[in-house]
Amino acid sequence: MNILKKIYNSKLFRALLEVAFSFTLAFLLLASLRVILGVESPLFVVSSGSMMPTLNIGDIIVVQKVMPAQLGIGDIVVFRNPYVPYGSPIVHRIVNIRVDEEGNYKISTVGDAIGRGIDQFSPWDASLLIGRVILRIPYIGNLYLFISTEDRSITIITFIIILLILFLFFGGEGKKETQKKALGYTRLLYIFAINSLLICLVIFSLWGLGAYGFGMFGEYQLNAERYGAENVFLVMGFMTYRIDCQVYGRIRQGALTFSWFQFLLLVLILFNVTEVLVPIVRYRLNRESSNKNE
Image (cartoon, rainbow, N blue to C red; front, side, top):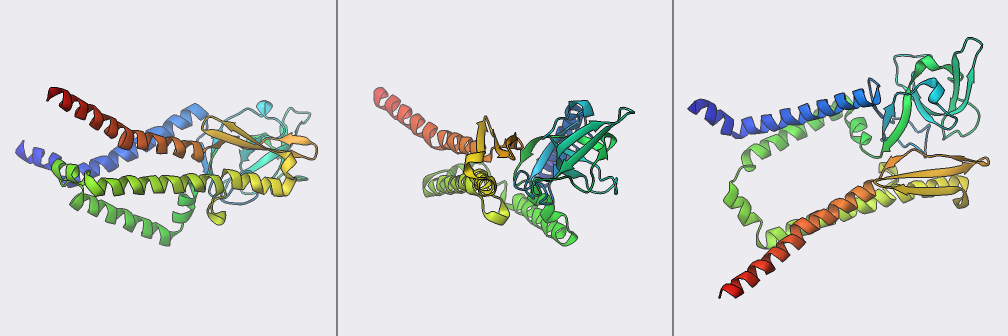
């Protein structure tokens, strides 16, 4: 029993347990998405610019299974390449749907970067359809693209191992040490650093850094330069936004996009409430209580 207790309390075992828990949680989340959305692979990473500026390289798109009869002109869909069925899927926008004499759906698509006509895959049979894009999450897919090559994979794995070693040696200094670090100038520096980081991320989520992402306003500006500011409409929702454009006399809906700006702003507010406001209020209440007791 003592041996088992020592193993359980060891830093290495705790670290491995946390890693295993993280992988299990990720697996359960992915399995749940597969069941809910009805597709084998509900998440795809955009790796080409054929749908820019609606979908950018490095975006993650969430795909839901739909029947061909549920599709409409303007929907963004993911489908298998008719010429290379087991290759990388294609993400394009529907421009035409027709039903042949046998009742088979034939779908024509094109990338937003091209805008007119049809792509080289069209018309393609609806049996190649994987699903419809229901959500876009900017930036996150860049990590996958970064580590997709062998050399970068080795770099990332090495970095993770170094972090794990640092955690094992410096992650368990005890409660007293943690309390000491939470006091004085160290705590002020910590609060300042986190606030600075969050503010920088908020600004990045709005304007981006060009090759590393365009940001919400950056995407709006790209569309405005292409179609004219009077034809571009930014539609805000809760934790989401969408950029619609009037193209050739008709409204073309953009992809519903997760709003990093709203999310990071909420994190910034919650952080300052819990780390700044609550301690100040608690300190004043304790001080008033002490004065009354005296």
